[in-house]
Length: 255
Image 1 (spheres, rainbow, N blue to C red):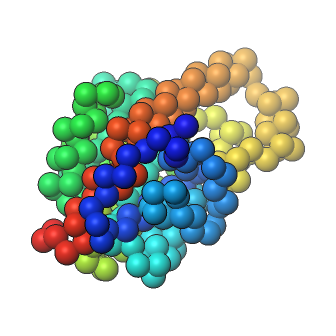
Image 2 (cartoon, one colour):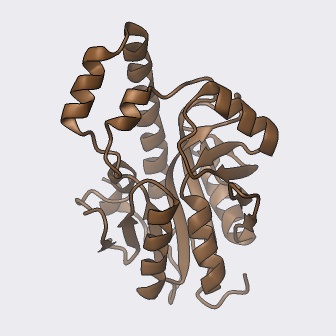
C-alpha cells in the first residue's frame, strides 16, 4: 500500500501538510485509517487532514496544519474536468488557482515543475489553470459555461482556500488533482444529496434515491464509479512516485 512504500524524499526541516476533502482521497496516501476532522501524522512525518467538502472546511484544515508547524501545503484529491479533452485519471497540476471571485494564486513554480517532471512518466499530466467553486459544478451546461468563461482546465472546491492560507502564512503551496468526472458528464442530483461531507454514503437517502432514479441515472452512476476509481488509482501512483514529502522545497527556500 502507498503509505507503507513512500520514499522519504522530503527535505530536512520541511513538514508538508496535506488537505484532502474525502476519506477516499486520503486513502491514496496511506494504508492506515485516517479519521476525518483531525490531524493525522503519516509514517513519513507528513500531516494529513481529511477536511470534508467545500472551501470553509478546507480553510479550517489549512489553518490547523499551519498551526501544527507545517511549512508547505498541498491540496490533494479529485477534480471535475472542464476541458472536454481530459480523460478519467488525468492528473491536473495547475500553475495557478483561480477563486470564484476571480482572485488568482500561483503555485510554487519550481516545486510544481519537479512534480510534473516525475508524474508525466507514470500518468497523463495536465497543466493549465484550476478554478475553484463554492458549489458543486454538476451539470454539463454549468461545466461548459465555466470553461468558456474562465479557460480553466478543471474545477474543485478546496484548492483556493488552501492557497489563500498558504499565501497568508508565507509557505509554498501546490495542488494535485485527478479527474473523476468528465466535462460531458452530469452528476446525479440524488447522489450529491446522499453523501456526507467526507464523501461517504448516507444509506437511507442513497437507497431512496436509487429507488426513484431512472435507468439512465443508474448507468451514469456506474460510469462515475469507474471514473472515480481511475482517479484514485492515478493519485495512488502519484503518491508512490513522488515520495512522502511530495518533493517539497526546503523550509526556508525563496518561494
